[in-house]
Length: 71
Image (cartoon, one colour):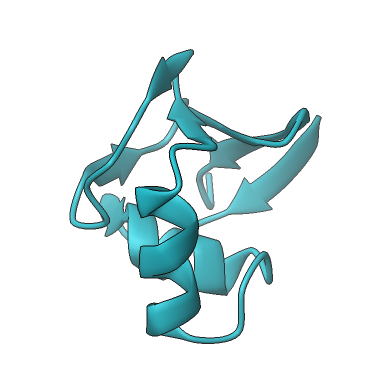
């Protein structure tokens, strides 16, 4: 599991995918999310505006990303 540090209280799923370098653009993030392969905390997520917070786990194709804070 990769740990990805965020510096705000929340981040949208689309922004997170770009921040974690999973995708390069918002359009790519949208397409990836709508394809149904992105899970948040074990549940398929189809909304790129989904707010993520520290402690959430995003999974794409078996790769897991844990959001951590700047504490």
